[in-house]
Amino acid sequence: MLPTPKKFFLTAAKAEGHNHLTAFDNALLEGGIGNINLIRVSSILPPSAEYDSGLVIPPGSLVPTAYGFIVSETPGDIISAAVGVGLSADSFGVIMEFSGRCNQDEAEKKVADMIKEAFVSRNMDLVDMKIKAVDHKVERIGCALAAVPLWY
Image 1 (tube, one colour):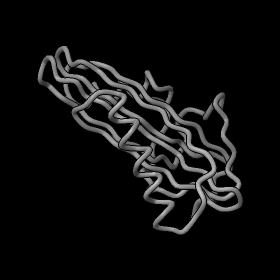
Image 2: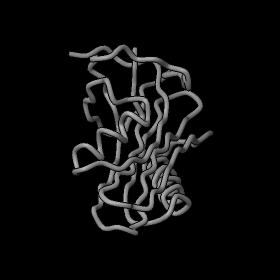
Image 3: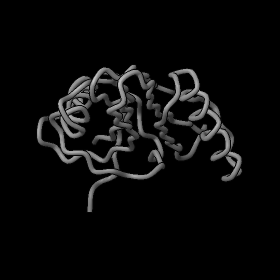
C-alpha cells in the first residue's frame, strides 16, 4: 500500500515523435515527468495536499498521477490536453483530466466545467481551481498531455 501523497503539481506539454509511443514519451519529457514511472490514478486529491510548482521527483520513482493525453498521426490536427484541480476549504480536492481534438481554450473550459460538476455532485464548496492545458498542431505524429503528479 502506498502512503497518502502530500504534494502535487500540474503539467501540460506537447511533442512530436516517430510513432505513438515516442510522441507520448517526448511529451512526458517536455512536461518534466519523463523519467518517472506513472501509476495512473483517478480523480481525488488527498486532504491537505500542497501545491508545489517546483517539485522535483527522483528518476525512477513510482508516482501516482492523474493524466490525459491524445496522440494523432493526422498532419494539421489540433489536439489538446488539460488537467484541473478543484480545491475545497477543508476537505479533499477533485482532479479532472481531458484530451481531445479542440484548442487549448476549449480544453480548459471542459475541465473547469467537469470540476464544477464534481463539486456539485459531492455537495462540496469549490474555493479554488488550478488548470493547466496545452494544444498542438500535428506535424507527423503528435501528442498533447496534461498531468497531475502526486508526491510524498
